[in-house]
Image (tube, rainbow, N blue to C red; front, side):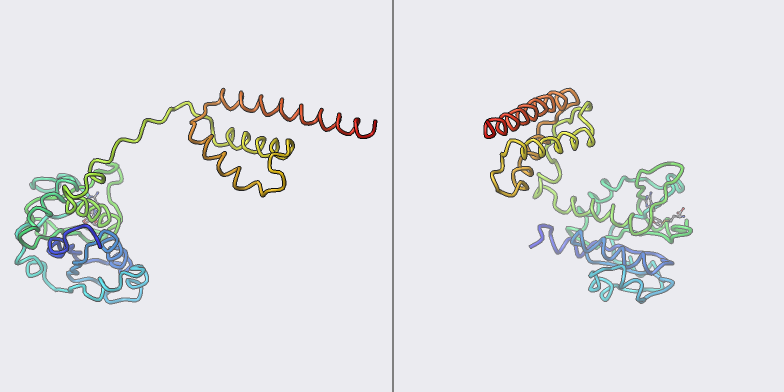
Length: 264
Ligand code: SAH
């Protein structure tokens, strides 16, 4: 069972206005479904229903089949008590501007009582000024100022993820305030240095007959985990490789001695 409130989730409409590429409609349906959301409204889509939309939905066909298609934005949001409009260009209109997190929090709050809507514009031109005039506030996903326009379905994914977190609210402290991952050192050995070490370790284990006929894979997997957990730096890798080199030398000597002994 999903942990978000299904009644509030069902009150949150993702409204795609004038979408040009059916693939984006399918990808948006998939984005919503992965986040436990379902209300997809299509206002004057250029090409829908379409095979391409179903292909890109990759299993979110139910959302596409249930999508409401309308000719008129006003009627799609008539009963909504909060309407927010996503725009790639910051500060284009005289509207209060929210981050996705602020927007999601407002949407989730109002959706506890009433329907709400989040508008997404056309791929080429976004939402018109008139469409933005219908909105209580604009939503902008912070992005590279020189290249701030996300793919439509990618924007839907960002907002639907934030909406999911907001709907989970206090029920999911581990998601909302995940404990900080301990800071990784910045002077760690490189991938290539570690792989060099692991190759020499595998070779050494063979030479000292550590495996005794068992398959080496399981021991190597455990040893990799152990050494990767240790966050080795370059000097430490060199130290370990020095130990291996000595072990290899001793194994060779013992091998030669063994041959001599058996001959002598
Ligand atoms: N060329 C259009 C971009 C359209 S992208 C323009 O300049 O407006 C299609 C839709 O995805 C946008 O209308 C918007 O709803 C959403 N979108 C894309 N990038 C976004 C961003 N950085 N922040 C918020 N919404 C974004």
